[in-house]
Image 1 (cartoon, rainbow, N blue to C red):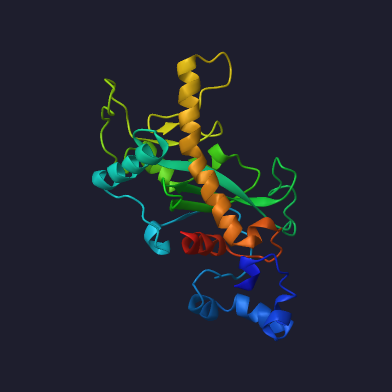
Image 2: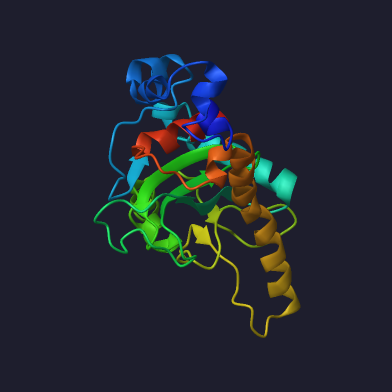
Length: 252
């Protein structure tokens, strides 16, 4: 637990606990003890080679499953961030890892380090409602999203989202949408900013409002990293995907 909450080395934790180094490793690797202590460090072996979708009920996350629930999320976004019909902010975070053996450049990302990607959707209150983790750091955020079951359901309109509505004080029917940055594809239910070239005043205002709503996911990652200091380090233990999922669950 101390290892995840602080930047403490796994080898220095035993000093704090008055135990041996072998004991601390054992505590981290024993799934029973881990499940007993907040259920977030379930780790045994191997950095994942592919991303894994996480079911909301598995982590206690609240992923909307009805039109009424989606409307509730959208109402909070409009009240807090003045972006109508928004049902979630999508973003990805690179989790730095020590280069796995015999992996070549598989996990090497554009930032010049090795990582796996934690993709998530946050609601207006910085709470995660969807998590996908484990894709190698070479893949773009848009590429990671395209691998998820969530995106498949979004494209095939199987998320039980409401039909387009006319926001207050407008005469235009708008679909319910998620928001993301330029790395994501533009679809009917996924909005991203206009490219920053020769924008009209209206387009600049749209980008500003979308950016405010989109930053919710960035801020959610920031809050999580401030609570779990391990995200400010290079993780050198071969945690399984479940490790990241459990921390997200505890944060949320």
